[in-house]
Each structure stands twice: as C-alpha cells, then as structure tokens.
Amino acid sequence: KVKQVAVIAVEDEIREEEVMACIVLQSDYQPSKEIALEIFEWSKQFLAYFKLPAWILFVVDLPIGTSQKVQKVNLFPKGLDPRKEENVMDMRSLKKKG
Image 1 (cartoon, helix red, strand yellow):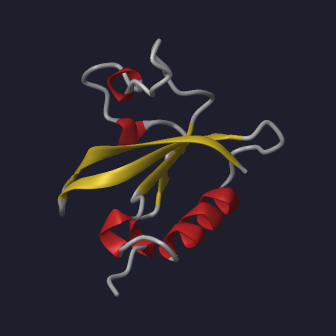
Image 2 (tube, one colour):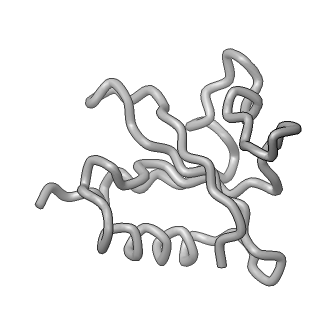
C-alpha cells in the first residue's frame, strides 16, 4: 500500500521530539485512519516503541532532488508545524512502552 515514505522529527511537548511519517500511498489506495492504523500496527512488529511514528501524514508526493533522494527540508514551508496539517493522524496514544 505504501509507495514512498519520509520520516522526520517534529516538536513534542512531552518528549521534545517525536517521529512523523510522511507517506505516499500506491495509486490504488486512499488515505484513511484504517490504513494509518494498519501501517502503525505493522511497524510495531519491527520497531522499538520510541521509533514508532507518533504522527502519520499522507501526502501526494515527496520532494525529490536531482540525486533522486527525498529533500526533507522541502517537505513543509519553513516555520510551518507539520502536526497542524489538515489530515495528520496523531498516533501517540497507541504508543506503549514494552
């Protein structure tokens, strides 16, 4: 279901920084809370709790440079809080230690 992903650090009131996953879905899928939960649950099998995405945001595309690498600095305009994006999904309540 996932075509591309970029992971960034975002500010967090409790832990100073948290993980945000910016996800581009395959063209057959539409962003939904169900898909976000599926991705989160799948990630729990492979990542420590502190590496899990606290925020998931589905995006149309990722900014790619001439070297074909994601340009994370161009994901959001400077000064914009990505946690305030319209369709961001807060997954922090699902993160449990252990």
